[in-house]
Amino acid sequence: MRTTRLASREELPDFTDSEILRELITTLTATGRWATSAVARELMLFAMHKYAPIAKAWHRDPADAGYAAFLAFRTRATLTADDPWAVVTHAVRLAIAADEHADRLMTSSDKARRPSKRPPLEPIRAGYYEEFLYDVYRRDAFVEPDDSNDAVENVIRSACVFFVITGWSARPVEAAVEYICNRISSLSSHDSAMDTLTVDTALAYRLGYSDNTWASLVRLLIGTKPSRRHDAGTGILGRVLLGDTVADLLQDADLVRMAREVGRAGAL
Image 1 (cartoon, rainbow, N blue to C red):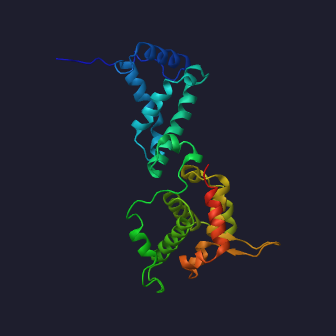
Image 2: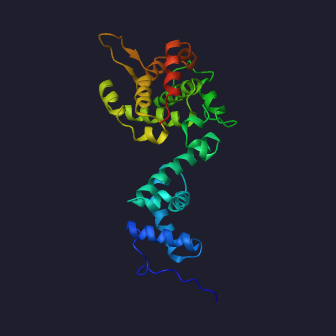
Image 3: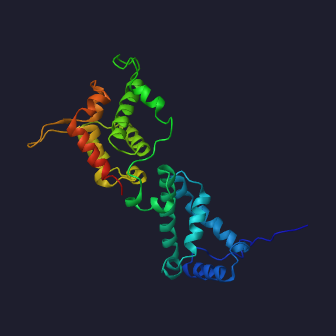
């Protein structure tokens, strides 16, 4: 019977120690034992477990993070760094984000790593918006919805369609609009909504939006308060609640121009 002897926990080196990790990587690479060494296997399992939260945040398999770590282990930057794990962690974050952007944009991971080489618009798969658009432009759109949940859904969908038509990538802006609407429902005033949401950038970074783009998106959705220089501006959400359709929003040249400018400057 063929048996495979794995390294016991007592025999395993301390992978968290920078010098031990550096020596182990150097030895495995020099001897070509990455595929056969039991210690190498345990190192990869350790890396997969360590970076599983990063993979989960981007809806990727932990094995993808493990593969990204494997590639990073073999680079000169990792071997010469004072803190090899810091280099590997940074590389894994970039790789996982690039893979997710590549899948969404139907492009290569290499291009997805560089915002300047990404497609200007996210490809829309056949049939993706068929039901979505019919829901927004349904025949009875002028009828007052019986259910408040239906009204909220219509507001979110209308806002999303407006942003997609003005050049925003579909899936990120859908997630952003839905999140902002949900957060607004728990806030007591316009001021608290602006103060809270403009600095609530955790989701913004995951979606690839810069701080300025996120703040501008919040203002477009919930509007601005009057000041000495400017009149109050009703946001997109408020306008749809008051009866505006997507067609009405698209007839507002200033709103369309602003949405396009913010959308073009959106990537981190």
